[in-house]
Length: 142
Length: 465
Image: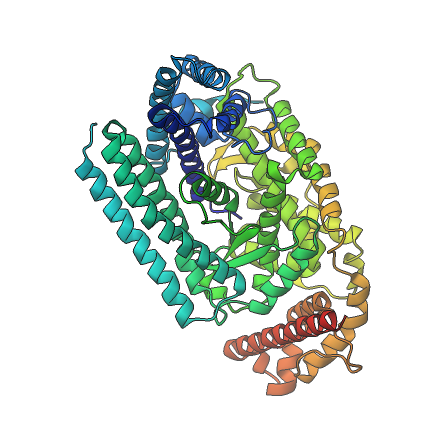
């Protein structure tokens, strides 16, 4: 048996840490011009891809981001458009880190991931039961 | 909301004091009690983490001075460290309570030895925790470990979460009892499941099982037009929970034999989950008890355990047979006690996932499974010793098999304890609650000592080569 509450809450903290990881790399890049850890954005990108399609198996080493708690938090903060935009911006930085606009893009990404992190930390404090919308859909299954 | 340096200083000072307390607490516990090595390693990790956090806080303040526009982010960094430490906080006190005088140390040691025989689990360690809940838990360590890995990678290099460390919780009232604690084999199954189902482990069997779970989710949702990711994730979570529970039950049976089933039936009975109506219900976190027991019976029959104790018919065995006979068509799914849910989830699980679980359990436990032949050989000796009121031991110096000791003693406890009491206390004494309880306790102590002897002998034998 596993204590459910602890397990669910841990999902929010993992999401907050995931955002923290991305933010820390981007801050180093934007504020100090360091590019050594930029490649770790690949892993984050792969996690976001998995969040778009949770029925695919998560890749090795990538944080899964496929749990209900994490998907719900992502949906609370980001629209589909935001998610796509975040992925595009990450790809742009990975492709051409030395581009003159890269730092600007990094700052925009930091804002997006900060919103995600704030919501994840909030949900960690105040975990919510499964939403009514999801419950209704489940009840409609036959 | 904008924050200034004072807010950040306040937050980091609070966290500093928190880390300082936890650090000192762990050190003080280790000075005053004796712990298993695994607990010691866990405390050491916490101490390293706390001193790492304390050092890191100063550099966060320094960074805030250089980049004031990042104050909000730096404040969140401190918050994340605090929340991670809070998560560990929930484990530290229960781990500190579980010193060697309050836990069934020989049983945990035996179970850990068996776990290490499973391929890919060599070097694994189990930290025992004592919980105020009347329930056995395995603390989901995958997330905590992933979080530990991120903290190490991005914030505090050098504080490495001990690899292959699992946590199991026992009710504090049951810490030193023996037979009810056989349930820990199931919890150790959770530890193994989480360790090997992690994509990093690249275990093919678990990867196949995960694919089967995804297929069953797709089948359950096939009639729905919704492509909602959250609905998919919830159904996946339910089916994954049922999968783990069945996996862990079968894993426990493979390692410890029928004693696990008999122990679990005692526990489910205490929770009122063995009545016909409650036994057929699947809930989000657990499959129906009747289904669990049906799978137990199948495994026990396949492994020839079931026919190895003919003529012994304790109530627990009858309960198992009765519930295992209930047809699958009776199983239902409930969101909670009053709210029925879609049965398609149960059918999808039974058809797509269960056969894979059975195969995987066999594969994983191939080198760690218990032996019915040893049981048949050792059982008469164990019973003779217990009836004579001594710790089970063999006459020829060769040690008894610990799993045989457990099963033979448990069967003796369920069927022959009144005779033992009559023999030593006189006719009628077996009907006195206090006397019965005292002799049950004595029987558990003899069993535990016999296992301790067996482990010691095995260790000595290995040392001698």
